[in-house]
Image 1: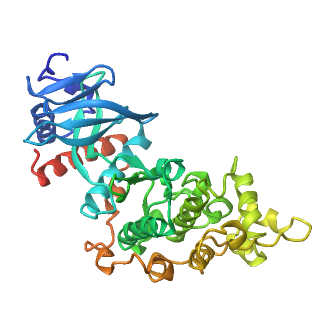
Image 2: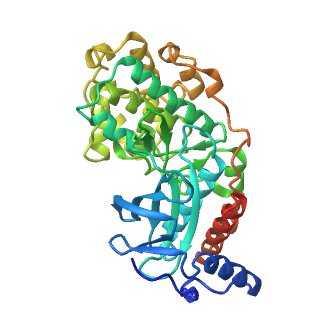
Image 3: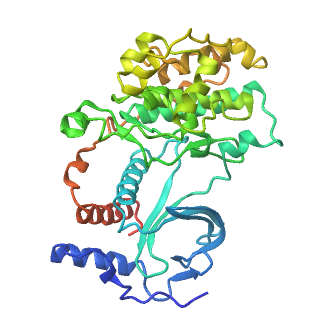
Length: 401
């Protein structure tokens, strides 16, 4: 274990040009987090955390940074947390935007049992430990590992219960006029007790009318290259137009199918192959759908000669599934966007009646998420300042400052 951090802590590494008052406020906040004797290092992972945390092991690593499990030794019973450290946070615009968006969403949606909880935030500036540290509840598994494990046996009741929890979480999110845009088993965590929690809001966006009125109406502002390919709705691949909450519902349909198959239902190597994989099951998209998509890709498909392929019956693909499961799949995995079931329609579907508890299906009481903050973030400096202020605000509101 290395010595504690120095209190001057390389504040000069942070972006400057703030007002004098804001500089003092932010410096005081950052230095207070790094007082001598109050922090410990882990030089294997390059983590610097408050002394009450003991790093257990690395859980995952990506281009964004690294995730570790840790024990909070404060109190009589050690509490396990997951700590995500995002590196290069102040030097990459896309990381700043995603971090701000994810932090605001997790704060906004806090308290729902099917959405992961954010416990604490801090910014460390001393190298090589610098980064944004996000402390979250530690969840033992992600749903991908559960589904693909040969040691786990699912009854249809289990599948209903899992899908129902996803629907409850998505209802809460959609009721705030937010779409997740990256729903997949790897972004749904699973506790040992089988409680599912949706995570990773870095690609989430708003669809509220005021959001588009504020200048976010073009598809260039809301990229269609979202959602891991295998869970991506066909309109994201073929259309240049704006999309809706229906893209999340397609992803839920893919996850439902994966529970039965124990592998993804559509595993395309690239976007074109992904469409071909969808066509193998759903058949050739109707002409009116391709016209409605209105993109060059869809027009090219429209002009492809030869007879269209028919859709396969769901019973031939999932013989072990109930008729209710077949029906729900048929209402989620559709070429047409408008008839695709909403989350509210899914919650009324017979497939989940055995596990449904209406008291577990609240809408977000805060109403539509306010995206107006994005209008003022026009430069890297704006983004940097805003992120620091969000961390300060979160710690003040949670009593951790």
